[in-house]
Length: 567
Image 1 (cartoon, one colour):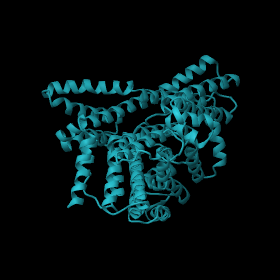
Image 2 (image 1 turned 135 degrees about the vertical axis):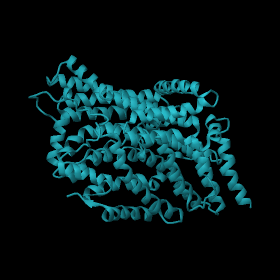
Image 3 (image 1 turned 45 degrees about the horizontal axis):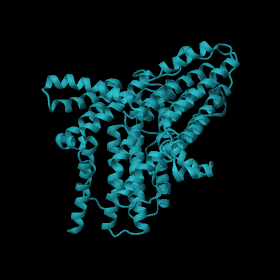
Image 4 (image 1 turned 45 degrees about the vertical axis):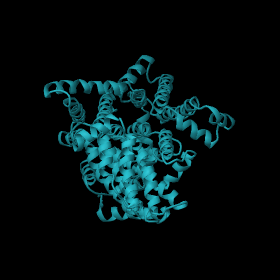
């Protein structure tokens, strides 16, 4: 009885305490299952109408209308709901982080345009085409390049696609498959990279969540490192991408897309125009210029070096006390890199790095007599214009996330799905719960912030009920923390309103709905392996180093059984 009462208190009192006096908690109680309306409207209409902008707008409006109709009649609620949509968009734009992301996207679009105009993208494509002897190697090169840009998922999506698109097009790899490879090496690799733009946020929520169970001297970075083997979805997805290329097998909608590309040579679906296409005719290389790979490599390397330098300097400016002293004493130590990168404002740094890369690209093009200064600025601005639709979608996606928080969707899901759970099932259920919230909200960051403060005390309580202590308790906590971080990424990976999913579609020049429709089958398949071969076995006491090889085998077996040869 005592165990049941304690478990009941963990599931009921803890969420109430965490969300006390929170508008989202009040609305979650008030609306109940209706809190699911905004994300369901946006997601279902995206698939039905294939119009992402309209779907997102109506999703946001449905939420603002729900909130407004409580205190107003239906006609006033419609007007107020419409006004609130614009307020949500303005507030999203006014947020310093979001503003930095928008400027970063626009500026990187400008850099890509300059590289394209200088013939750099075409030169790299031709060089890689010579190296790539088949569609298999083209996919592997795309995967490797995705791993190379590990430090930020946005930068990954914006850099890899435009560079690799001509190569994959040559070997008749569908744009859907290219978008999938980009997306599968964006958040999944950034989320487990020990030095990235993600790590500061991840460390902060781990530390604050452990404080809820009275552990104030926790080494959050050590916890983060220990969760890496338990990030089953991230790891299995990276292996899955290689397996599909090496085995030359696909299944589901991706098989149809690949066969279309192979048989007809049509790499992009004709259902609807892609979300973006950087290769505007005005941005094609000038006739007769010498194609040099350095026209692409130099600006991209400058962008990456400037980003790394910016992360270090920006992060260092936020440090103080003992941490700052240690960094100054050993400026290139692992501790220094971890602290500076973890505390850097990634949105600002990447915008600044893109501006610096822009200057270098302009001077390089002028030095090689490819364009004049005025022509370069014109090309750069055209590069910004190619990103406008992406900015619109990002603004609406952020607005939807905001309205979802206001109506209490995430709180409702947590409260409804949280119940008495056996210890062996908790990590798997947390993974699934995180997936649902992240899919609906389109944000892995928000999901991590919502779930982690609930999961750490919950796992601690359930572990205690089952007699876990010492190393057993520690491992149990680690696998549940990993389940939060991984579930958030899986849901975000599937969601059509996720910013990384949107950017992956844009980078690949792929229709957004086609990207989501082909990717979701693969993501769900890897998620099943994550649960069956990953979280359930380790929660039952098996070593993570048994679960990982088991998952690898399952990936290859799944492709062998369900996959069809692309011939």
